[in-house]
Length: 68
Image (cartoon, rainbow, N blue to C red; front, side, top):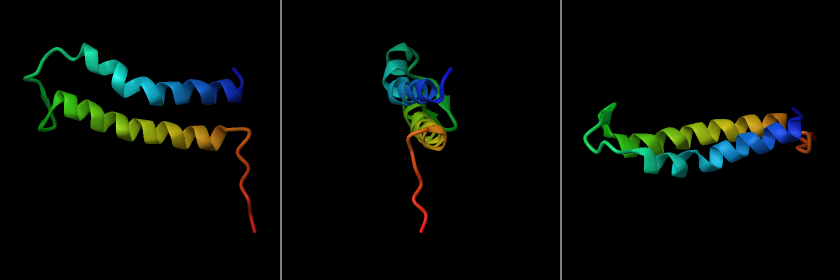
């Protein structure tokens, strides 16, 4: 798998991770770390999405860092 394809795949996962999981949440009474599961899911994907975008930025072959 090329680096560019990996970047696209990780970006796709980060973008669709939160909204695609919401329809599968059936239990309203479930709590994780003191949060209702839906809120926990959203907060989790905020952190996961940020982490994935950091990885994408580091492996992106088109990203050039300017040094002065």
